[in-house]
Amino acid sequence: MDHNPPNAKKQKYICGIDAALDIIGGKWKAHILYALMDGTLRYSQIQPALPRKITQRMLTKELRDLEKSGLVTRTVYPEIPPKVEYSLTDKGRSIMPILDQLCTWGGENITEEIEIICS
Amino acid sequence: MDHNPPNAKKQKYICGIDAALDIIGGKWKAHILYALMDGTLRYSQIQPALPRKITQRMLTKELRDLEKSGLVTRTVYPEIPPKVEYSLTDKGRSIMPILDQLCTWGGENITEEIEIICS
DNA sequence: CAGCATCCAAGACGATACTG
DNA sequence: CAGTATCGTCTTGGATGCTG
Image (cartoon, rainbow over all chains, first blue to last red; front, side, top):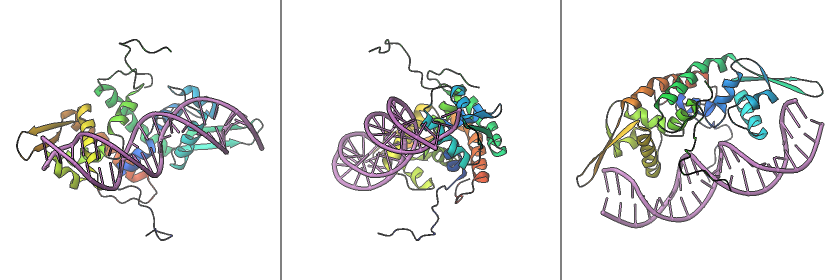
């Protein structure tokens, strides 16, 4: 067993591509970012803003991921009933142009069945 | 059971983003595209050109995926021993600028441990 | 040389029920 | 309202051995 010493940093990425795909990849993250493009949304407003149904479990998880990555801020208002708002950070906004290009490229270069809902 | 009628096309994507991420997402596809940027490579040359070790199973699968997506061409020379060459198509080259932007963005915006090898 | 076939582990994702 | 907790399934990717 040659486990890592306590402070051996895991080298997760070997290229910016890996990091970027990790942050915006998956089934939901890009769509959530698009939903927050037009402004702040409450938790309960994000779900209907997405192009397909997401479970609460996934929505919570993806929002936490995006928050960790620094693309989204989470603001909790200590009221009853609770109110939590999400919005894009500058860093979050900074990736939107690239997302737009990806979206356009994807829309133009796919021959399979595709229904454009967003963007 | 309400199964689909025979010619009901599966609607796989609802947005260009989904299509694009499906094509260049995953652990390997972007790196393979980068490897082919400088010109044609044989199967056995791709493996060492990648920033980390890939298994044959994965390399074959990813190349087939990229071929299906139309980003890569596969040319078989009917010799013994066999020789197969891979190169980017125009469509493949058309996504490289976006990949570059993603790579740059990822490299700039990640605080975690990262060792830049490619690009 | 350029693969294919088989098996397996880990993670992504979904369904459902419950809660401060 | 904005989540947790638990469970189950499907997909991704790796290890290994075999072949025309």
